[in-house]
Image 1 (cartoon, rainbow, N blue to C red):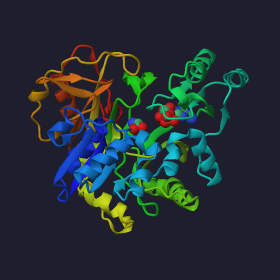
Image 2 (cartoon, helix red, strand yellow; image 1 turned 45 degrees about the vertical axis):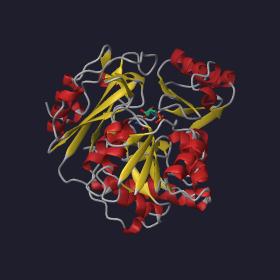
Image 3 (cartoon, rainbow, N blue to C red; image 1 turned 60 degrees about the vertical axis):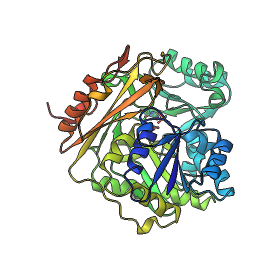
Image 4 (spheres, rainbow, N blue to C red; image 1 turned 90 degrees about the vertical axis):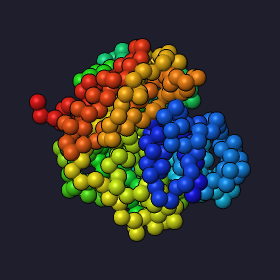
Length: 423
Ligand code: AMP
Ligand code: GLY
């Protein structure tokens, strides 16, 4: 098969890397890809949100199957458009993707189908939002309604932080139209977990568990980012809990979406908080996580393309998905100084060639090639992933590799997975 992967980040590098091991896949293209993806796929210079041009490419190149990485093209209807042209594609349609692309829509959906979530109020006026904040106890969580690359939620501890978050989203429009409306949510303390699952719209099969480290700095300090690292499996999640997550969250979500006439096919990934043995959904994502995918896929024993084909043919109930037993993986994100705010691009990355470890894979996110050099081209630049028999060993491997890679103003967290390793 000829496969096109849409996107050009660390998640897409992990997907391309895994698909390159598939017995079904002969050739992979990636649009737009990056310097690391180019090692396994032919990169095509089309933006991931340029749906018409992607479709023309699929037609011209006779692509058999397209896999979409990022949420933007999904929320803009790439799947609906490809379906209308009879091109096979992996991911939810625009309406189903709304559970990620509008947080207010997701809240209404959860309330209708009794899926536990934090209570909230939505606003389309900054003044009203600020008045609400002034008359409520803190902390509160302020969220832009639309897509904001994982940066649209602020846990505000002080009045000033809360007001700033409203101003940034609604007045400065830091996330464009995504901040036309906001919601203000009750703060839920607890332990955060992410569960990604495959679904064909009817059957839902959770993947191995993981947890991500969202804040920019060690010890959970600094602003929220798209994710600075991940580990898998998450030692806090056992089989009993996973079963409950399927019964209480995943299956009702998939059934609700089907009931509404917007069945969801692809990867669904709720972010959850666990408090006193109860779950609350903080958000839904309608695609693979980034950098969750970078730790999950190295532990997947089953052929990823085979799973995607089962989903495509609505036969996920016939799929057997296997994960490597007794293995753990760790991904440490290496980023550019300034991320998640302003940062420079085009800085040469050194040391990539020195990583020679068959249990380490350096997934590229924001990288590109200039002449024969690999340079930075984004905020999150690399996701250095290692796997081994224990979390501690995987962590040591990953940080050994991180230490060999350098560029000016590089930064990473030093505590990915540390809270789960006995000292
Ligand atoms: P979201 O984009 O909705 O996933 O929010 C980003 C991050 O903000 C989450 O991963 C949590 O760490 C935090 N967060 C979001 N909503 C809440 C909430 N209601 N209570 C506590 N923390 C939250
Ligand atoms: N790591 C968070 C996300 O992919 O949304």
